[in-house]
Amino acid sequence: DGQLSYPDTKFFLVTVELKNLRSDREIEVTGRNFELFDSKGTRYTPYGIESQVSYSLRPLSSTSVQLTYIITRDAAGDHIRFTFPAASAADNPGMVMLALS
Image (cartoon, rainbow, N blue to C red; front, top):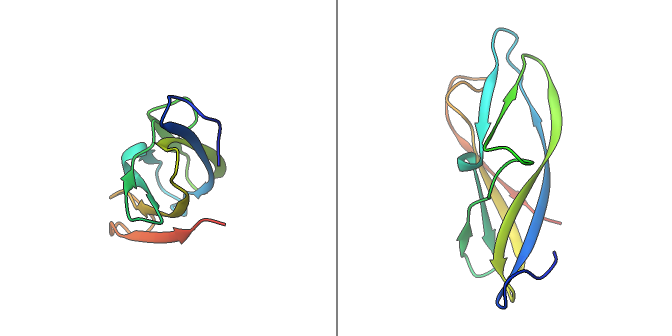
């Protein structure tokens, strides 16, 4: 639960593990695939993945990446929602909700 930034906001960093289960092609993951929700239900989008706008994953590869959010100072991250890209393992876009610990 991060460093203070502007007078009423703070940085909130989330580390996630990405894995491409496909054996035949890369997948492209962007910040638009992630949404952070605080305990009040407010939605935030990240400012990027690591220092990039998007991240390409080679077939059958995995990596840990950091997402950077700027949230209100009184907020606490509650859960994050990931929407799978169209080229994901099942070629079936979907989403998963993950609780933050």
